[in-house]
Each structure stands twice: as C-alpha cells, then as structure tokens.
Amino acid sequence: MTVELTQGGSVRGEVLSESAERVVVDLGFTILQVPRDAVARIIKEEAGTATTSLAGADLYRTDPVARTQSVKDLVNNIGDRVVLVKTPSGLGSGFIIHQDGYLITNDHVVAGETQVTVTVFANGEKGMDKQTWENVRIVALNGDLDLALLKIETPDNRKFPTVPLGDSDELKQGQPVFAIGAPLGLERSVSQGIISLKNRLENGRMYIQTTTQINPGNSGGPLFNLRGEVVGVNNMKIVAAGAEGLGFAIPGAVLKAFLKNRDAFAYDPANPNAGFRYNKPPRPEATPPKPL
Image (cartoon, rainbow, N blue to C red; front, side):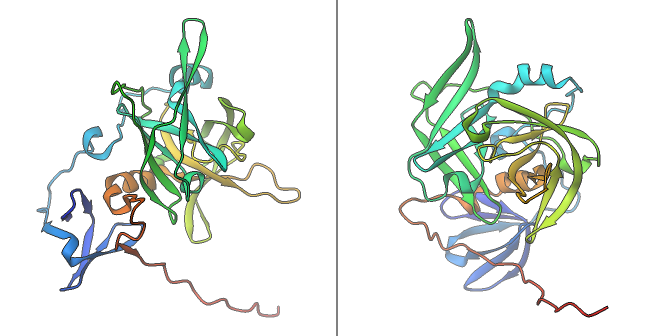
C-alpha cells in the first residue's frame, strides 16, 4: 500500500493497523507510526499490479545490461561518481545516484552537522580535476540504518554522472567486490576483496561481510560488484588484536528501501522531532551460559 502524506511525498509498505491517532506501516526493515493528521490518503494496490523503479521516483537507476569488467576499467569508468564528504568534525565517502546531485553516505558521517561539503573528482584534459561544493543539503537520514541522502545544490543545475544500484540479494559467497573511498582522507583509494558472507547479523542489523579493506574515511562509500553496480554501502570494520579483513557494508536492498521511503526520514533542521516514531525491535533477554 502507498500512504500519501499531507506535506507531500509518500511511504510504501504493509499497513498493519489504522486508528484515529495513527497509521502503523511495515516498511520491511522497520515499523513506522505515522500520525493520522499527517496522512492524506491510503492507496491500496491491486494484486498483480507491477511497480517500476524509476530514477525520478526513487532517485536511483539500475543497469540491466551492465557487463563484467576488470577493476581497472571500472575505476576509470565510474570512479568520478565517488565523492569525498567533509564536515567540521570529520570526513567520509559517498557516491552520486542521481544526475541532479543526490548522493548517499552514512548517517554517522553527517549526523549533528549543519555544514557539509562534497568534493567531486572528474577526469579532465590535464588529469584529475577536483571541485568542492559547499552548498550541500541534507535531504533524509536515519541513524538506525546509518544512511543519509544529500543533495549538491549548484547554481547552474549541473548534471552529474551516476552509479547504478545492483541486487545485493544475488551476491554469492566468494564473489569479488571492490571499494572506492577516502580511507584516512586518502581520496580516490581503491581496495578489492571478496564477499565473506552476504547476510551477517551484527548488533541487530544485517550486513554484507567482506574482506575488502575498510578504514575510517571509507564510511558511506560504495561497495561495487564487477559489473560496476553498488551492492552495499561501506559502514564499519571490526578492530581487534589479530583481526583482519572484517569489513561490513549495508546491503543495497536496505538502501533501496531507504530511498523509496525517504519522505519518512526527511531531515528538518528547524524541527528534528517530526512526529514520526521508529520503534526499536524487541531484543531477547540475555541467557546466562550453562556449564558443560
């Protein structure tokens, strides 16, 4: 079902319940309680109705005819779509998904910040050109998913090259993947690895586990397959004595759901408490270990 909001936009999912106070919607990865006065109408889709993912509607594109290439060729072809995201307190990576300047990064890269700059790298006539944009708007973010949607506001309505999103559900254990980002601020760095496990559960969240080297500064950057499609958003690594090659990325399926329902996560600097409440999932009580 589609729940249209009075302030514009909509969210899609299964309506679990309706009352005079609220409408409860299952978005697939979280339960959203929408105040009744924020709901314009509820559209029930008929069985068998096909939905199409359009860049204009969901802000991302797919590439059904993408072919497997070498990492070297892919970096040359799509490396200019990966950006550096800076705030007064730190930096991270991101990637452009829509030609109007919409890009993805992690929530923890921009959370609590009001000044965000994005540096875009492009192949110029005399090498790599670097341009920094200071007029960057936070469109939507969610701390539980650790995803943020930003938009570069340009005076000339510039069109940017974009990366396609792939299907993270099709990932296979041992499949080659690679990352582009700015670990420790070292911009345009490339690292390669394999999928260790596509559905690793950590702290109540589902991640893609990969041997691709992920370091501070890679946060928010893309994890690519060898078709040049983004299959994950690099998020964290496990740092411990003797631990190596334990990187994690947010699955592309979660990113797509975030984008389709971005109005539910809309950022309002004047009113951070927008009235939408996200319930924490129930956690099982810790059971003390039994002696063997």
